[in-house]
Image (cartoon, rainbow, N blue to C red; front, side):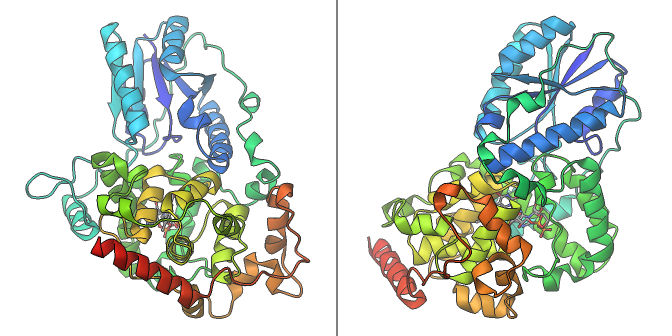
Length: 465
Ligand code: FAD
């Protein structure tokens, strides 16, 4: 009997244990992608980018004489319909760890098994299963460094190669048309600008890795904090859709000596740590991880927060980051920390407002890494930066963007002759924002020292209860 392979965020042939195991059975395989709430309900940029990933993976499967069947709707009824149309014996998939996927997948597994059908899930989304890295007493980690040491010491399973052959069924069930899903519709005018920055698909992701390891990884440790240098891999965009597997990256990096390659694996392990935290404490995603933060005097969604979203705070390093995200769909890690600190500290705005904007705007959006990042900066998370450590965007700029190259790349108003990328921001944003590169750059929303003092005073009163 054929097997249905339900692809979700594992849109690749290589380093895909589920696919490798399925191909090894020699049975006919029916790959399927379902646009359920986990696709239609995500932010505009991520939904658009998911469409690119699906399109590319469909072509890749076609190159192997297979297909990617597309269906829309709630996953269980869609799968049951496919089973009845194809006579498949069951469904296999790669495990995900967010609460929505876990509940959905458990229900599906129970239901299929109760019907006498196969339902099997595999590891593949992370370096290790969230429950396989454990403290000496068998519990989860709360702090990154011991987590990393434990993961590195226990080692990471080898990446499996792409299967040589995928057996096609004698009859293919019908597929919907990807264009009909209009996954990019909410992108408004932004999609063409984003498309010029996206690097989609398995082959492109692999090239990106190889190029990064050959050219850049040696200087990764010293250069990774400087946003104007092309010193980071850019692989988050591919990892989130599974266009490349984390174990492939890990083992490829292990083949390189030097502290750059080791540091790169350490950063990759942060992604696993985020999944570990999300799995063991799912409230990471939407509530203060530490309860005491519920009493903090967070500001709501004010006019200042809207200025922040639009990259109009008057603080150039902050605005450059927000505009970079709008134009490219990603933001440099150092700048993510700076814009998050500015919102949660200088503007004292609830981190969830920033989290939501990132979720709406990032093509590399990942629920676990995004929530961990925001709670880390805000101070409300496990292993968080202490609240009183307030990033000063001006001194950060002096240190990490001394020549203002990064700021000028994204802020047209700072140059007499702005470049293409800075100007493309004005093409990407909604027309209703009424932005115009000819308008002068805004004055700061708040002086940095005043914002810092206000935040520290509020923190002091939280501490005193
Ligand atoms: P590289 O420096 O090349 O690192 C390699 C890989 O390691 C990355 O692709 C990523 O998978 C992982 N990694 C590196 N740093 C981190 C980190 N701090 N946390 C988790 N994984 C990490 N990352 C996302 O993938 N999606 C998000 O939605 C996201 N939101 C964030 C929000 C905030 C407020 C902050 C501070 C960080 C966030 N990050 C997020 C983490 C980090 O900024 C990005 O993973 C990184 O910038 C991606 O660029 P890169 O692939 O070039 O990274």
